[in-house]
Image 1 (cartoon, rainbow, N blue to C red):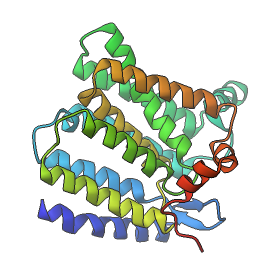
Image 2 (image 1 turned 120 degrees about the vertical axis):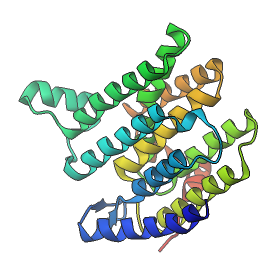
Image 3 (image 1 turned 90 degrees about the vertical axis):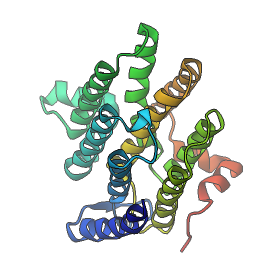
Image 4 (image 1 turned 180 degrees about the vertical axis):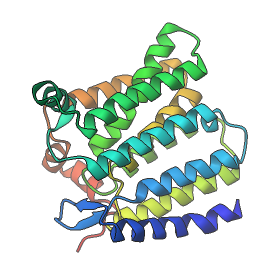
Length: 264
């Protein structure tokens, strides 16, 4: 695992430079061009632990890797070829119906459903209820993480909270696994907090995909249903309200949102 701790920062730096050179970036909320390369760090870290697992773990199965990699690839396609409009799933569907053009956003949505179904087919949940909850989490979590990815470290903070919740409700994993997790969190914190790189669709959705797999393998069905309720709630709220505007109206949420983000 020493190879991982040496190679991961190198991958983060090289991917950032490569994305900048290829002009694979977008204007952030400060109107600065930032490469959306952090998804590469996440998928590399997941692929490395899949190839050299520190311990036997259902989250690192082939079906999980196939699903996670596919979600990352779909997000990358949307990052590279996607357009600012239309917005939202409804907008993409209406655009396809009205103009007969399939946007990359709609391709990503359909692909996410397809690979979620494939994951379930490969794992065969115990019941219809478990299958339905799992399907909704596999589809919903990548989308919700993408909704939060409008300011630096928002997805990071949500992810930290979920990971802590999973660790509290499960036996602690190996020391090596914890060190890998902390290393990934640290690199993301530094690069995103200093606004050197961003997650983009590929980074935010792949984090959501990994969290969905972790939740399905490490939490009870009751807790999965609780998190599904929260996911559905956030998706419904996003249709009517801007998360950024809601956060700006609350001094507490605004302070949490700005925590760790380097100012000018």
